[in-house]
Image (tube, rainbow, N blue to C red; front, side):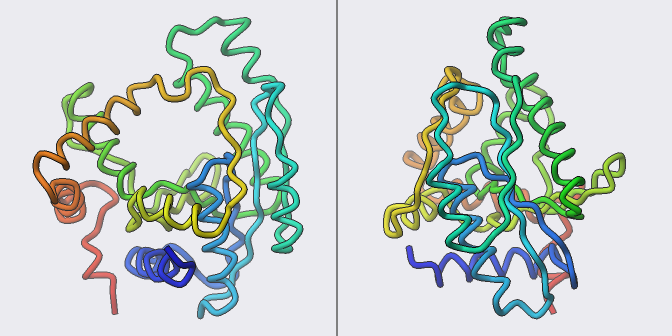
Length: 244
């Protein structure tokens, strides 16, 4: 996938859900994975011509694993002239060594978001962009149905009143295959996750389930996404009502 194609998806999502206003300063959460780096490329390119001027600031929360090398991401941010903050933490030690969590993801996510939000506010940002794509939206809905018994997923735009911070998800209309295509075509410097729980989570279960369902019933992922868009879920106004 070319950058121009990715930009068309990202701009449509931003316009449909009014994610960006004039003079926003948006933190881009960079995990080092394919999704967050693709989003960095997209927002960097978009800000050159988007009618509402905005700035971006890349932020990575370093969980404290010894084998995490962020040098290529630092070089990329320098090349793109995007400010980059690395937040050093000992979250990995707390979760895996001190607490020895049998289900480490929940605690890790909570601590990571706390460290990220603190750094975002310190950088003077009023918004943060998460790199959740269409597959993530549907997988989260499946997880909610299976394990919580409710029809729910995260919203395109979420205001965190305690932090006075708005979360936006500009890659909402992109599939994971689109992201992989962009990353492979453009030699994006992806950093492999050093987390020992990576690939062994309920999220991975939902990902595999969605692949199976879509293989057996072609188009089911798109139909599920449409059901979310037009299902009157909290935080999901119908996009056509927002498009001028």
